[in-house]
Image (cartoon, rainbow, N blue to C red; front, side):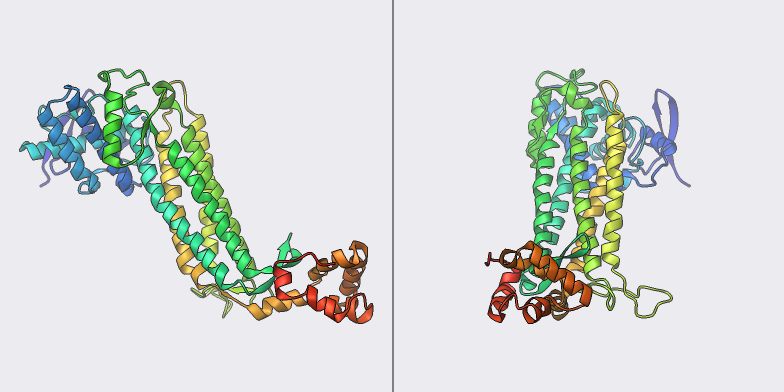
Length: 468
């Protein structure tokens, strides 16, 4: 039979399974918040960051003589074990919850306290020796511990995302080199525009995404400002003098991040502007990724009745009724991922706006939205690169044929013949179905063959020189 221990809080007593490391407040959260079905342990970087915050607090409290050095040492050792992921299964609270993250903070406090108690040779729940609030949460509030851990976790999660996005940009750049000698038609408003190199088109995709790496770094700098030591509302109540500065220094050493203590802790405790900025950056990248995927779908459309300038890797049959049909499933799934991230940005915006007075209690849904968006975008970048971009091939002959037969090449003649004459050539070619060459050179003899050949070389089509 399952065994239990008894724990109490100011609401009463509860039976806790003897083998779990969390305590009564975590149990209450499990009972109260069954929203997403996604527990805190699904974000191991957040669990790790909570352990780092608690270790830094223990060390700072020890340094200031607030916490017994022996207890502080056990807490620090327990935090090190939690940070490795050894106790991830014990972080069970739902990612979305009421209470401004108090349940997450207490989940961490209880697990760390009970791990420390076992290391002391005590039983779980013997909190007189190491208490979740009095010792693990010493000189802290949820209102500084939670957002500080959140920002540390976001910083670390963005590293993996940046790497995935950078790899995707590199894959497009490599295709840019591979396709540099493929002539194709550029298009605006889904109409023929002027010729270009397919390599330049793919290089531009890479440039477009690499811009986002800079924006991610800007956002990482913003979320490196923390309010640790602010305690409840930023007045540093229950924290000893100098604690905020010392705990921040310990956090820098533990995390390796360039964390900065906010200059105004009252403002920093309620301000969520950095999350809005980061969410906007994620949305911006999602929009760009979705646009690129739209282009890949258009360029690969067909194969007989579409543009068909490129081939995407065939991954699976595309229809239960139409034999031979293959769909652009990877660009489609990235499109849908982008839609989710765009929607999550509105969630972050609304939650940030909902802050009142000295605290924004909606931070749990902000954390869920940002963690989820970063995870989804990271996977989308990997999937798009591995399953699609690296396997794209060019239909070079077909693409060049489209250029040579296009009316759009008439634009190259503007400096020589003038806009009005060139418009007449284009109109005649469209009306009769003849080529621009037939109208301009063969019929109207407006250009010599030598001049035509000079204008319509491959190099001059993709990197035009001004020719008169």
